[in-house]
Image: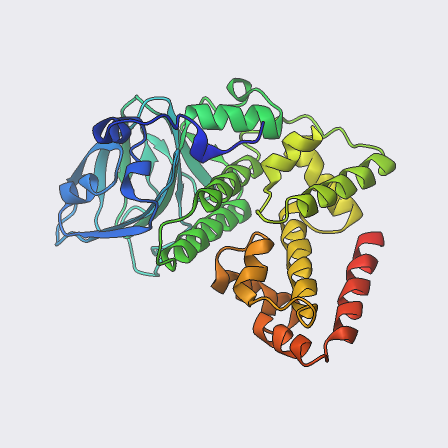
Length: 375
């Protein structure tokens, strides 16, 4: 059974019931940015939370919240100008992960001097290399300093447990931290912040609400990032398959993606299909191909699209149709990825093919992919 986050609890509901059961999904699957000039206004701007903010330092308050609501997940970035005491509570059967951005000693994320560089959650100091985790349905207290920036991820408990069992192949209850603060290492924390920032920026550039497939892939990406931190995973080493088994796993993954080329197969689906954990799948791809599974899945679809564009002299189709046939529904992102991989625009490949001048390029690309897959 494929993990389709947008299909969980998808029974028709009244509008107010949707808001109560899935407050993140009620906001239209678009990135929203709110600016507040009052601490309580800032508290109200975050959907699905019950919270109160008290301003503790003098001056005019300014805060922002950039929020991406998904079906059963909420990703946001919050900035606040002044020291605050916050009482917060997220919805029941959910988990909040808070990731403050790292700030150089003596300054905030923008280099401005700040009083009290570290925050606190329920009286526990949040170290530079740490994130926070609190369950839903329980009120907690945050003390945040001036010039504060924090990324937040809220995941429904059902989704987190199901992903852990079916993709990571572990029982989540055995690995959830029993402390408010988890130290994950500064490098990991900075990578996670960069990934979440990029996700919000790219989603904000979309002029239409995200499709169900795009939302599923985003949620899977965020969950993978959280488990990659190491705080939610078992300390036991991954059971390494034999080399023939590793090659078989990679080969089966490729065949499955090609058989379902009209949509973007994600890593959780492959894990279920091949009955392996995400860590095992990642190890196999790194060992056989030297790259991550998600990157390779995108690359083989891009190569497939290129071959179709190169064959346009016998089967002329517009770029948009070829992209859609290979599961690329965001045309501008497809064009960006295509040019990054091949050094030309898809429209240029199509034009060259219609002129009958692209046959050598097809052979060169095909040979390079075969070389990569066999070395």
